[in-house]
Image (cartoon, rainbow, N blue to C red; front, side, top):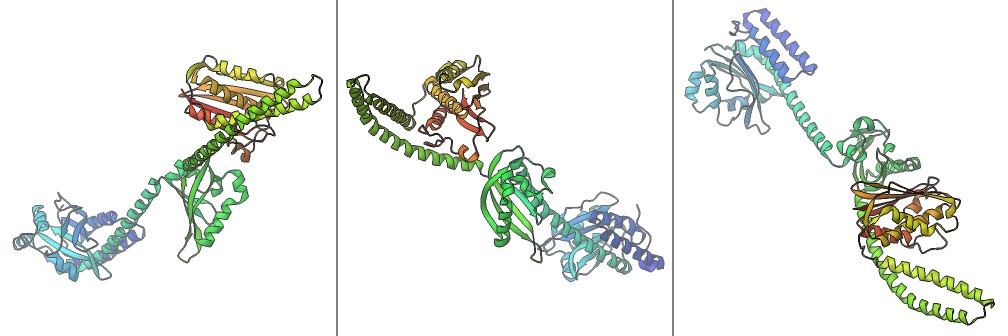
Length: 532
């Protein structure tokens, strides 16, 4: 397209009116949030009515004011000097223009190139076919932030009238450029922060002053299972088990944050979307507005469930080692004297007449000696668990054999025993050691159902062999449940409290695990899982 024949504002009042109208349009576009590209395209089309050009471009100084980069450019033909081109300004003819904020008219670019053969930018624009140029500084608060170039394929095109006309236009362009630069910088920082926020493996949550979730990152989704659309807007208490939510635990943390400004490494039990209880460590920081008013808090959380388990396992292992060493010593010290006492009592009993009333006392003594002997045997089993001798055995047969030994106990007749899913399954483990596990679990189930009930052993096979032993007894509450496998812990009046601890050590010696699930009034399930 050929350049306009208009020579500038001096061409008539209609040019001035058009210029004012264009300024108003630019101002309106700025107020409506138009981008620099949109404003630049508008200018490229509209300025043809007032200024001759075949190409226009905008270049911006960098933060150190050392380099000039083309931010936008349009031409009616190919562009060698296009968007993204960057060049240093030191020693160039543009340096004094930018330093002093002056405009420049070059009506013979070929002559300018002969005088400045080192100017790469001039060489490229001449190669494009341009012969005249008008350069105007972009000023913000009187300081240059870049330049705007107008170029024509014709010589001797630009006049001071063009320069004067374009000053007002370029001032508005400078505002647009500055605003765009600020928005780009803000957008870049926002994207950077969002990248950190969403890329974090830890949960990053922002809670508003009314206790509702306002920000929910990818780390929070991975830990809890809720998507942003499910979490944002809901009370933060949704992450707590019902009992803790009712107790006001969250309000206690909020009060501490308001009083101290932050709470660091606070640990507690939280609840995931699928109902799992997890341990979470969190740091909460008070958020304030510019006036210092509290507007909520930021929360960084990480799942420390596995870490706590490792810590508990370490403590458990150390405790077992200490208890085991003590138990072995005590057991050996008791076992030999106990055998001597038992033998002596038996000699006395044999010397008594059959109708001697003292024989009942002797019977009670012997019964207590047996109890002590069982306790010593349990202590030794716990202190020095045997190494499993693995064999292929029939799972169903082993479970039935264990139940048969208990079926004659008082109360066993009122219990319905069943086995599910074990038919034809061959298990690889130590049959004697696992027999002891089944005896302990079945015995606990019997004692949990004094009025009768159902005892079920259900097997399933995946990568590991899993057996669930479930009773319909009264169930176990939380505080007791947490102590079930501790050595010497028992809720019974008789017993050593070592049965489940020994069972756990046997299962772990097979490379497996054992856990318990229960609730008051809902019965109890023990799960044994052993690799095969």
